[in-house]
Image (cartoon, rainbow, N blue to C red; front, side, top):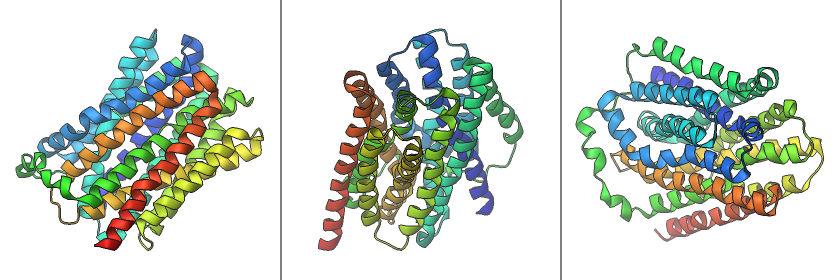
Length: 383
């Protein structure tokens, strides 16, 4: 179990670090290639849309190849995405590169969450998921900070090329390691079954809360650099502000994950969404650099701290369901739809009404996300 957790944690650090760093390249790419905010939102959506396509097939691939090898293949694909980004001359080529990267990023979480649900004790699910997701943010903070410094010194193309090399090197090192995360092959066909999920109302409501939460929080980090630039922050300091946001991610994931093991998960989720909505409005209205950093930390805690909470809600709803890959795959499809729509909606709002409006719209989505969680509480009380 410890070896499996270590393997997953290392790959999660890389997966999340590379995903956040790719998005952080967009302000520099947009300036050089004259991209609109709608096109920027489209590129962010391209990373998410492939998650919808891959969520279910990823489980079957893992069943045949093994969890570790599937995740290493995913790492190879987002390495290709970085390589393509470094060479892209125009928007269509960027879109292809981002789709390649999204293929790698999208395969990771459905497989990893299903594997964690199998090997972790029920009473420690929230804590383990919180620590797991927070470790991913360690890679985000380090890699995003380094990336902005490199871009300022050598440009975004050489930086993207350098970042493309690391996945290829690690793939050569890790490929021959024994796969401790393999799903039994005899379960491959069973994963495609399980239509009785439609009668599991706790699962449905948890997935609904997760999907609306994705609309509220999935793309905030995509538009925060543009908000900071509009407030007069120089490009060299973008890493400081985004690092404060991702530092908040780690704080929120560990604290809210642990809290969800001792307090009703839906209560934790509702409180986090309300706080998120308040600070989305506040950060859009402030011009103080100090307050922007403070609000970034709080928003980081709330927008990503809900992740382990809602995943724990989903995990607990599947206590008697054997085909976890199928269930988490469906959840990834639905949540991925929210993640895909969010940057397009927010990008359109930012182009038409100003960058602040993207944060106001996200605040509205955060409040809407509380509705299925409230219904879930009512459903549990009636049982």
